[in-house]
Image 1 (cartoon, rainbow, N blue to C red):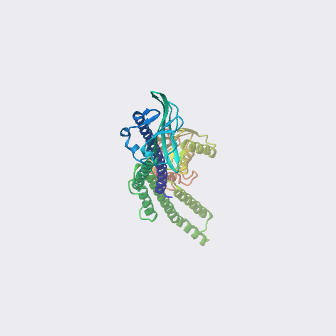
Image 2 (cartoon, rainbow, N blue to C red):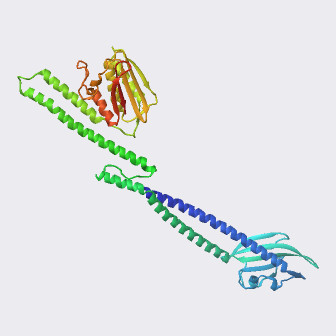
Image 3 (cartoon, helix red, strand yellow):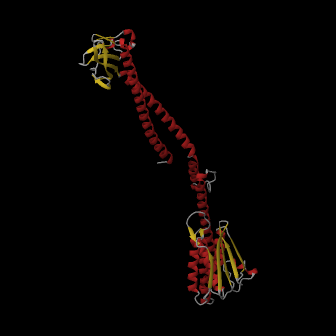
Length: 438
């Protein structure tokens, strides 16, 4: 299910619940308000009825000109009657003639009662009030009843409910349409990213080119980083394979010539070519495997890598008794490939162990979001005019020292892959100092 559809469905569900609860609350409030108004109306009618009533000789006289017009209109929906203590009707309004009404209540003096009664499917509301009416002959117990038919009341409630739901549904539809338009506009950058990714997949473009809002800008930037990193990696593999094939041509030709001509066949020559081929393969594979720069992914603790390499080299060169000074913060992290970092530090420290007399210093620090590494030793050092030559593949400072001459060349390739820099200078300890920025 698409993101747009998920949001629309979720919003529709929430809006439906909200509209329903709102309608129920408003309807309930309107019904209670209408019922309260109806009670007030009945109370006013009853008090007007009591004010107009006259009692003579246990008979109730009611001047018609003082009554509400509805009480004089047959089947008007508003009815009134006065009963004695025994429940006998002493008077009823003209509107009650021919109407089937509920039995009126009989109450003691001072008592009042609101009551809802249903007869033959018709609902009525009764307000009764009991009084002791004083006459010349004494007092007489009377109960005044005001009765109203609820059909008009229920009709008003039904009309209100219909109007309420009509407006709420119309508002809900308007909100949903507005929300769909807003969502379509708000999610358009994501759709645009999707279109650009499709063009990248089909080869029409190389990376995401459009500018996007800040919320997804980091996503598009990281996608571009991954795409660029992948292209660089493929380029390195392709170049490495090409270089490997080209570099192996000469050793293979020499070996083929030696094997085809028994007179010139020499085991030393063959061994030399095998060693050369091994060096070439090692160098090209390492070059192809360089991960290169990337600002996403896991980070590597520099101190941990440094400690592991120093511990390993101490075992490789146990007779030299080298003292290694490390100035590396415990929390320093490198955002890149752990294998690349190990190759850089490993090759630099391996060279330092080979040439150092007693002391090696390694420092690592962050400068402007870059990792700065420096390895110094107290060995014979490197002449300034030979520093650049040692960065070339196969070049060694001393042919009598074991190695292939590709260590610094590997470091140079990794540094270039991370858009960094490499510099060889004289160490304060007297030997060489190699500074690397990644």
